[in-house]
Length: 116
Image 1 (cartoon, helix red, strand yellow):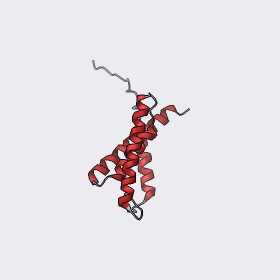
Image 2: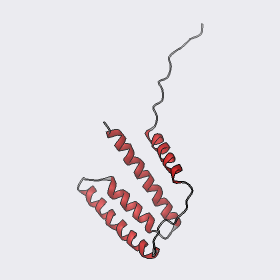
Image 3: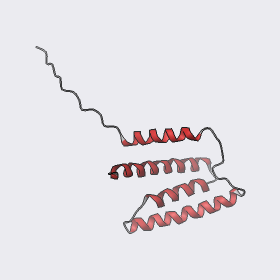
Image 4: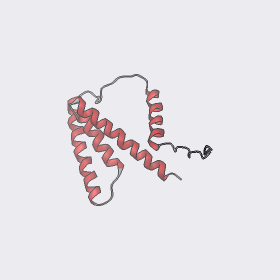
């Protein structure tokens, strides 16, 4: 006699990150194929110095907030973004922007969890 197990597996719950990345893909398509430098303006070298200083400032703010047990996505995002824009090295800038994207996705996941 064969066992006819008709129990169905529960439906897979969508991974929150997948839904967010789908939103990101849609938003990216709206940007089109325009190209531009990572750091614009009339004096990109001067801007890099500014972004590097801002990265340090926001990293210090993030550290102080973490020590006081009051962290926030804002300081971490701004520290990483400014560091990426301020970098002279393409690989470092790319890695920093990937980190910004990861932080942004994590922040959106939290917003979605906390949404009423």
